[in-house]
Length: 325
Image (tube, rainbow, N blue to C red; front, side, top):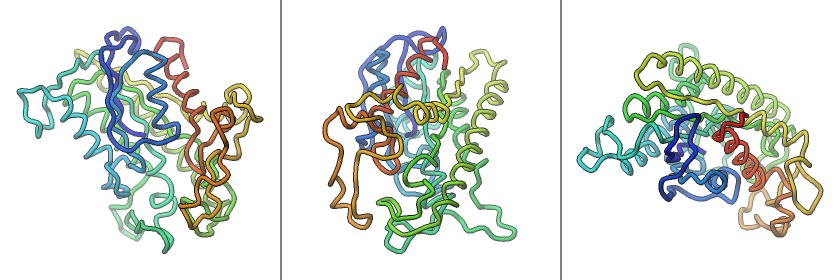
């Protein structure tokens, strides 16, 4: 999930009231990332514009995965939709036709930057349509992508939206605990997302360290950025949302959050792909109906379930309503 904009009319804490209907860009997911924003809109009454695309990274210059990234494409869509009619759509500093003081920009990105075909495992299996995506590590290499460069990428978008386009409210969401997913579990057997054997225990430990490192840098960086801009006439409000901790709470106390008709399940997933080498068989053995789906924390081997998305939306709505997080 990446750049999303919610329009509001109250900045006393964070957005509270709606102004208009929303539109969406990019492919939809039957999972938490896409539906999270729809539930957030439902719970708060806030309309939204969703510019996220499945499989996207913060910047294809850092982790060139292919789908429209935040840096170039998603930011450009946002500007194109909201530049004033008398402004050039090519200008990077065009004033927008929305009020920066009553608009919240939400950034939720990181999974694709850290995982397979990126920092964790840049060398793709031969059966994959992907090619190695990041520069190989070598002595004297100055272009290797690092966790700090990924954090800087996210923080730079906040600075750009504030300094160049006047957006004043930001919600920066942390990366989830990816080691709890099937894809990044200690199991080494193939999955639909990586259909060859691999070193599961090493993957799981590595993705844990990558995720926690990125989140630590994001939280500290958000505070530093806010402090550096605090003396401006209209300083930004930058809130860090600890999605990682919320997912841990769901995992450790599933019956509190998962309300389906089956026992709460945080280790399996609803959507099944029995043959890791054949996408056409995905769906065989899926859980049936909303009641069963809402029993699972995970939709598939990587993506959270719709019920998990509802939980995230509910917690963000509480935060926006001034009830803390």
